[in-house]
Image 1 (cartoon, each protein chain N blue to C red):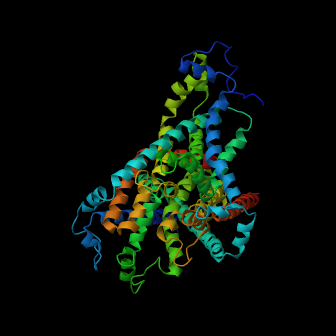
Image 2 (image 1 turned 120 degrees about the vertical axis):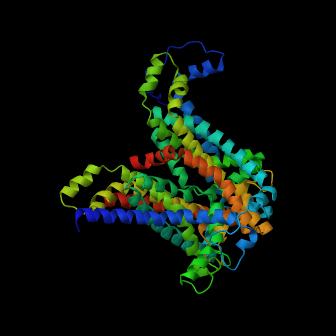
Image 3 (image 1 turned 180 degrees about the vertical axis):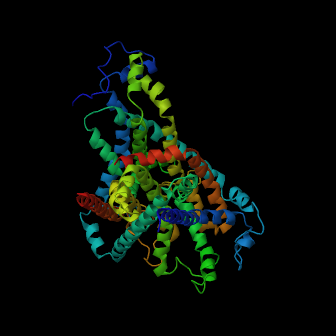
Length: 317
Length: 279
């Protein structure tokens, strides 16, 4: 193992260690392994609460592991994965996940970008608005779920009332009970909670772009539209790639909203992979099958991330 | 179209867009606050009241006195504090190490701490549950806080690293020439300068722990350890909770979040966006 090279010169020549704990720690900090001492606690914690569970979770996917009938537990190889192939709910969940993620990311990105472009005008009003639009993003999923469940309620919902008043609807609608509107309704809530994340990071990206570039191109006769395509978008690209990846991961991984609002129903109209895996574990105690669904989900995410980052890098060149 | 007219057009458009987005963002929150202030008979009515005719705090009294809400808030507070202690202590040290020193495996480790975010929560939740059950940590505040470090520690390290990176290392060098050890340079020179970042990171971690639902649902099943999001979500099913009380419960729990966010939002935004902009 090589020695850590600190930015600072050699340690102070050895002296006897003190018994005072603070002085003692101070002396430790002069030693050559100081950098490792700083990192090691985090490594141990990550190994314990992340790496071990992930490896163990992958292991579980090859086992029959049900708390409800422990007698049959044991290694079963690829059985769960084979079962997934013929599982109709799993197939529906894959398709729903795809829709949930694609529509979710595209809509949240677009609203987030347009908001960021407008906020980038600057000024005191925009500054205040920039803080206010972040509010939905910091709200807990439970409260967000309740807020929208109330607004979309089939008897008391304010959205129903407004839609009827302006003539969009003939009568109140039970948005979460209709298989055709349940998923779009939850995606609207997802948009509400998700677009501020894009706004926040894209606005920071916009503010980092040098104004001189716009001035120079204006001198050359470029209009706003071509400035947007030839200066803004290319310079934002790294931020866009990073935010899209993070948001896709977030959307694929967190079943909170759907768990709270529809629990996958009506029927399986809003069933997605993360929710299916959670239900299998939480309601059925079928840990092995839940693990297999999670592993598939993880693989899909990995493949997506690698391809997406590659393609956007190629597109840049 | 002259240049001035064009500018005016774009400016007006920007303000219109922002007006729409602000209404979309805040409207639902305002509606919840209004609902929480209405008496029950004014919520369940054939003619929807946009401005409440009668304002009452009954819903707040009801949620607070019934169904053990103070207990839930107390549990959430304890879990949040423990999460903060673990993440800030371990995360700050690690972030400082990553920020200041070159050592073998540094880049790879930093990357690992980034990739960890890709691991599905549902993949970790079951093995963590089995592990916690083995250690007797199910239904304990500490167990839940430990579970929260799975997704909060990496974020904490990345945010704090950004704040440390912004402090020039020459300051520590100067302190060391004056006879400080590295440790005392860290606590006497760097920490006071990183205070804003430290607070912002703590608020971000705190909000995330306070809001968390999925782990809390899996790892707690008794009043002694349940956090408020789980309690509130379960109340909907158990008690057929009226909308007014439900809204009041939401408002109560969200107030600390919004206040803290308001106080530190500037440095928080800086911390969250620093990594993304640098690429």
